[in-house]
Image (cartoon, rainbow, N blue to C red; front, side):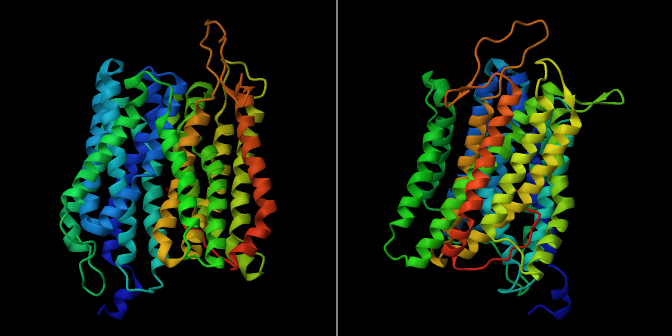
Length: 509
């Protein structure tokens, strides 16, 4: 049994997992910060195609944890899953490095291989390292909440400094830096797992459940093949059909139908599950707008934002460090605000907090729309406008992201908790794919001296000819979604039959 003094602090394993996750997130966010710029500048892809690929990649990243979680629980255990995932992601980042070296001629095929490895690898790594944090503590230990706060600080730390490093160099070296970050995470985990991954009762955690059978090995190989095929489908068949959209959005429709037709559900359980699905639907609009950070907003930062400071031009990818830094600074402030409101019995319930998050995202786009209204196609705006957008969006994230995970864990029936959490992440997958689709609507940039474009993207018959109209799309979309959710909030709270009080963790996906 652990002694009393040990229980006052945290086990060393927490800081070991903090380090491992920090470098893995450095790898992910470093690559993401330069990904769309790499596709448009090195592989010479059109904005529309690059945006769709970005959405497919980030969307599938949220789907594969369902596979990784299943194989971990049944066979692999957390440790082996993390090692498999880490190896695949390191290979994936190295493929991106090779793709950048080769360039437009042949680099696209290697990029597909790299993205496939990153997507599958993330599925094994992402759900399992978070699970291990809780396993380090005895059941019901009150330190677990603060442990996850510390752990998520590592995520934000990796997300903060990775764009600053990977974005400050040539694309190939940026991808290599992301690869080395993943190798650092993987090597440290392999070397020190036996020393640090021990519970306070002295038991090793995350060990394999049983040997992997041939069926599961074939499932992994088949999944790699399916992902590679879906990413390559358009290029292989010269088709405009986006099979990844059908796959992700189809799953979003089928999963609720399967769960809600379960005859074992009580009326209260079914009502609470309906609440989760309704809120998951609104979450798609939030992340669809928020995740423009790695897509259209990065293109905007690169092309139409004044980034010169005392003669030095700041890389466009640096803007992606604003959000994690703002979350680290503002999370304690939001925690104090919610705590104060709770003490006064004024704390809003989950649906209202999420509606507030949507409102703040809409406000961020109102600010940037003001900046670009009447802007000439070759003109640039001050970086303060874009910085303001990111800070306001970070406030919106703190209203919505931690609240959603907490709400699912509280409302889902225990026997369906893993499935419901998977469905919640499925909504994130749909949102990221949607983000890529929306990013593809950004109007073409006019190069100095080049003729004005004759074709413009359109959305439900509405033609988008300039940035003001583009950003207005997000204002209307998130503003209307926020208004509807505010109206529905009281009804949803009754359906929940439970008052909630959530604290804010410094979470990132």
